[in-house]
Image 1 (cartoon, rainbow, N blue to C red):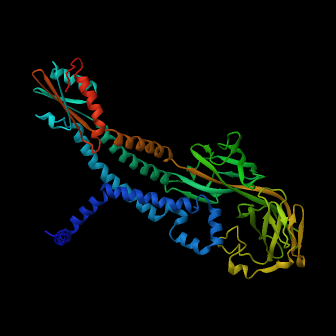
Image 2: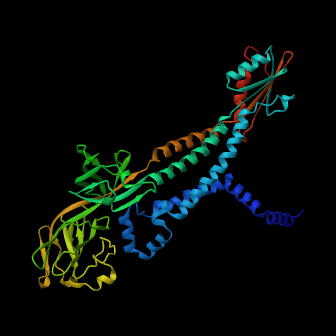
Image 3: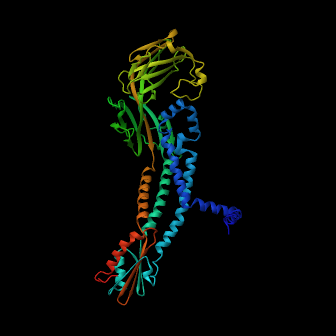
Length: 519
């Protein structure tokens, strides 16, 4: 039969399967080892964007910066859910298919494994010299003594009339089965973490605090089974944030260390304890882990409105524009100013230096000569009371920004303000004063009940795959006739015959102990 005829016959068979036949075919395909490996590869491949593209739940400031620098690319990333890879629809689909495939693999393997455990080794062949490994020697070895010696070598032994059959290496199948069970356990642990865990991000300025409540988060992603009462009731306060930089050499300006000095209350009634929070050294309270993931500057401003009243006073967290120099963009919104609301666009320079063209830039990320550039001052309705959410890093939506009245723009903007300096707004609209500098940190708070089980299952998977790869399934047969003892052996694992040769020689030595005539 030609290849074309075989293909036509196969196509006709598939066409005649019917709905039940197609379902059986789909189930067999899904639960095959090849499909499971493909899905596992796709899951690993799908995790790559989660490492390369900033994730909203981990680095929201980088996501916001990407929207500012390349809005078209950011929209495409968002369209394919690349900012939230591990909670995306396509990642969940691969995850569930892999979960189903593993269950379909484990059930038949478990049944086969149980049958193998209950099955006794087969009877010894009549001609042992035809086996891959064979030897014989003269001696008075009895069947019972041969069985006893093989049992001491941890073989499963069956005896018959003049023969002994022994087998071991069942740990290979055990490792194979436990590896699949461990993979399934990892998926279950991840699923449990998604259902009963949560994570959130919050920005905290020096001198401020944070209480682990839903309302205190800037971004909160709970599992479907998480309620407000599920959160561990701890609180913390940021007393000081220290950053050390390389001050000389080719790596000048590179951050060397970050340390957040905290006071932590594990419960509302517990005394405060001092904690130094560092990168990759999370704070853990009741299974909830708090990670330090970012930092920046928060200049302190005082805004006096046109009526001489202090309408705003406090630190403003600025979005980093240049990580190398920590040049940051700041937005100050003053909705309580009278007679009209005020808004300011500013740039913070940690170490301000004048350039030859008359502009200013930051020469170092550390706070050596902090100054603030006023890029623009506006008055009018900022749109904060129309019920629509706004980003704290932009003054107003584009349609609202067009309606604002510019007070200071372009060449009318004065030189950068040092700490303690102020600028008067034209027309008696008010005054902006730069009063100091603080730092902010961003925290990720995460509770994942599946973290430890996932680690245990991962360890089990490593040990299991090692057993599956290293252990060989082998059989040894002994026939005793008159004063001649014949021994034969073979492996049931492809490619392991060479490795079994040395072990077989040792087995023959044990059986022939006291009998020197070995052939």
